Image (cartoon, rainbow, N blue to C red; front, top):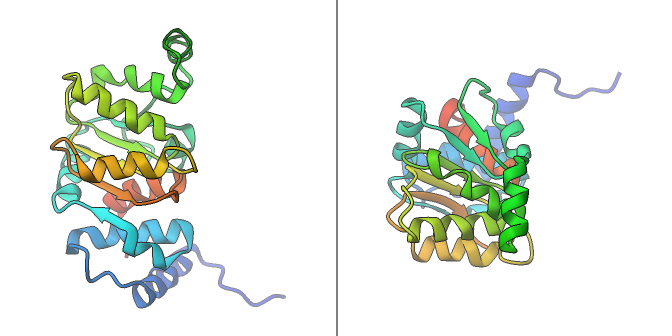
Length: 204
């Protein structure tokens, strides 16, 4: 029999201990460190900590939104499936036929069009983007047009077109909204979901 660690809790504990030993978390606020640990755990790269940007008020604002039962608005089903606590009010409008119709009518991506369907749920929500830069850009446009502000934004769009630019825009002008993001092209649904899991489960 191959000798390897089999117990899930022990695997998590050892993983988190290794991350704490290898990643320099000193630049992060105390209440943001579990978030960073979970993000690193999702991608296996301790070095990304230098590109994490977590505003000082993000953890408190996001936890308050979750505690109040406000919606968690996600841009992709992969983000929804990555969130461990399925009792939360998680909304993904990407596959709503109205999103496809709106995207075709306005000449934008379905991901961006799906953000239009968030409008009734936006106020006080936690927005979690793990795939599409166009969803993040569309969210900025909605806020700039006067749409209600979410309580916090976790932005981890990934890719070569628009990902770095959309996250740079968030850091440069968060529009009064607390945020967590990873600069550059890296991101993805696993990292985005990891933020929510850190907020609800910690990284013990």
